[in-house]
Length: 117
Ligand code: HEC
Image 1 (cartoon, rainbow, N blue to C red):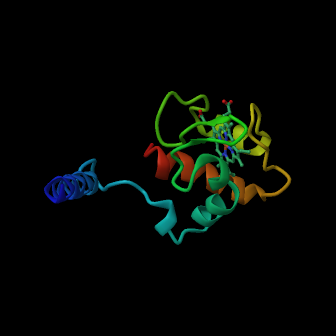
Image 2 (image 1 turned 120 degrees about the horizontal axis):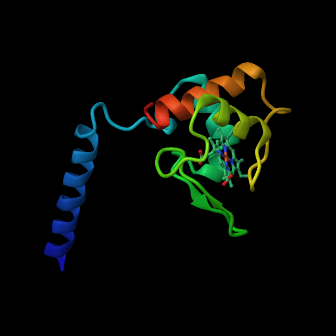
């Protein structure tokens, strides 16, 4: 039993390291970023999209999409901005809570840091 656990530990460590070294530069970690837009994300978006933007299912059954991968509905800056500002389909809009600059910083975070585009 101990051997199995040990094997599993080594395996996960190896997968973890592959994740760090592969993919050119690695994954942007919102939780470790000191950027202002990362803190905006943590305060406003993490509750639905998850701490790292991987998406999740809410208690009421709403399926919140990953902001990192999948078939995006909002494919360009204008559409991403529109979704964040106005919301829709289960998402609240942030036009009233956030400034124009903050909305634009979040568009950049989604496109550049999370999607790598
Ligand atoms: C109340 C939960 C909730 C909060 C809070 C929330 N979202 Fe969403 N978000 C959703 C849901 C649900 C969708 C899917 C909407 C749809 O399918 O049209 C979505 C969709 C999106 C999309 C479009 C994804 C695509 O497919 O292209 C973006 C971008 C996005 N959210 C960014 C944000 C950002 C940035 C914040 C923080 C400012 C945020 N969201 C806060 C629930 C939320």
